[in-house]
Image (tube, rainbow, N blue to C red; front, side, top):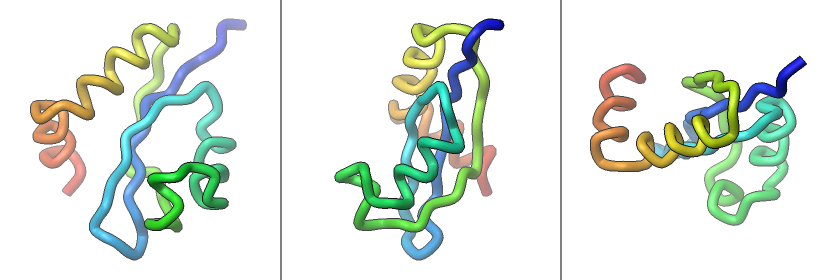
Amino acid sequence: MNELFYVYVLKSINFDKSYVGFTNNLNRRLTEHNKGKSKYTNIYKPWKVVYKEEYNTRKEARKREKYLKSSAGRRFLKEIIK
């Protein structure tokens, strides 16, 4: 069985902040964000997943993550996550 990779968007429950990342284990990564294991996301916790995409390779997921962090990607996310 092939490993899947996820590109995800988190939304802070208490702040007007979002975060884009990628992982091969979305549940584990969300738990890490909510436990404060990431320097950036720690101060805006708790988080919830508001969007995700699946990819078959790390390379594809990383490329999509980079796009979603760009200004065009942010505009795309703003339109689909209202």
